[in-house]
Length: 187
Image (cartoon, rainbow, N blue to C red):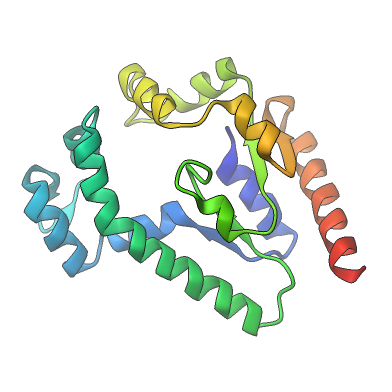
């Protein structure tokens, strides 16, 4: 969809951005997390660290395995998110962006004041995703199946950024959203 690229536009505008994906990658380097994941998915541990591709293969199309992994990772990601928000608040930031995949699906929308949905037509989304080295058509279909339909996300969002119209349009949308939010904060 262009979520990370759009999050970077917020960061360029001086807004602190928390990336749940980055937090997960950092967790996958921690010894205690590696041990917990290794106890459930030994095939995903390689040279003492989590091999994300092998972990993805171990949980693909296995809802119970996904729940087991989420039980390990999600509480730690939430703690990192809370620490990020607290630190930004103490530093005097009026806004922060939480770049969180599956926000609605995991109830994350209850933890935020406003939701920005980054969207693109499915053809563009598929083209972008399949360019990733570790992505297959099967994996893409599995990811889509776990997600709320784009139309529903759009209807529930406070703001929608259509990245299918190009980077300049997305950057302009970010600036417009920031102006609106800062005016609301000042008002």
